[in-house]
Length: 179
Image (cartoon, rainbow, N blue to C red; front, top):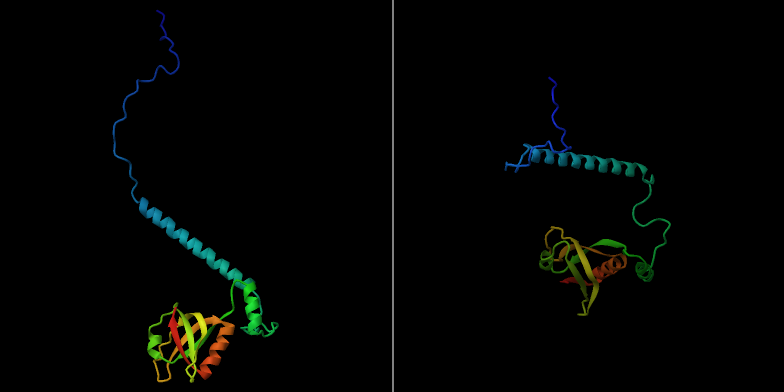
């Protein structure tokens, strides 16, 4: 007897009928948080190493004028306060210097902290007072103790103002007001 072949069906009709997928808990891989932390830790190390290499390359490629004096360049002429003000308007940053100042009232200095802004007032022996520096930033309050001649205060001021402060401190008693 001859064997009969099964009837040919169209493609795709031999698949079983669809059914609903059963609910199951999500798959959680253990150690995922550790691997993420480890990856971040190594990335930080790689970035730190890259920054260190870049800094070393910049230092190696920098200028070789170690004998040059620090401070104002030798080629630049000394300027007057009027030319300082004129050149400061053309630049974004003003040449700022730190100026140590002896304030007559030591208790007032103890109220100040680095970052405070103060006005420095000079009082002459005749009773006349004038503002010598306005809006000066306090950079340091040295803890050397108040004496009968006052207390020390370190201010960041423009170069011309530092000269006025030095002149006023030689002839007047200085006081500060907090801005």
